[in-house]
Image 1 (cartoon, rainbow, N blue to C red):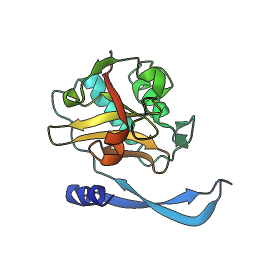
Image 2: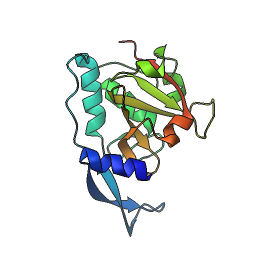
Image 3: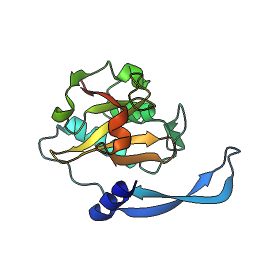
Image 4: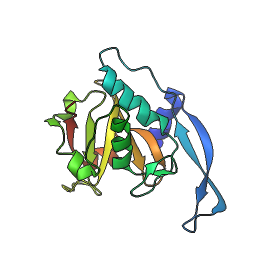
Length: 175
């Protein structure tokens, strides 16, 4: 966690306080800080359609997590991708497990913006339960956007122990 926070400080991330809702749906006086990184311009070699998908996904940053959600009131991980691809009139499957079969499998070292990354619920799991969209990829770092059950829609680094230990596969969308 300290590495992530240090990396966010180096990138100049800004924190925004948002109210956290309790299970009863009311604000309980609690708040949490959601880091919203300024969006970097996408490389010129990113196809226009995928750039639009990434920008749509980024427009949802700060949206709270809601299982089965597909709106700005609440969004889950596969719903984020479903809605982001719908913005370019591409229909993709609704569940993360089905989305994993939708693209062409690729090696992690070949990741580029617009690729989908899939994760399990626990380290070493082979059952897909989570999906994200690669927003930045370089030899040093891969960033992806997803809807986290604890933070809502955020961008994170794939290289953290948490995500690397849960990583299952990656696919390139068939557009």
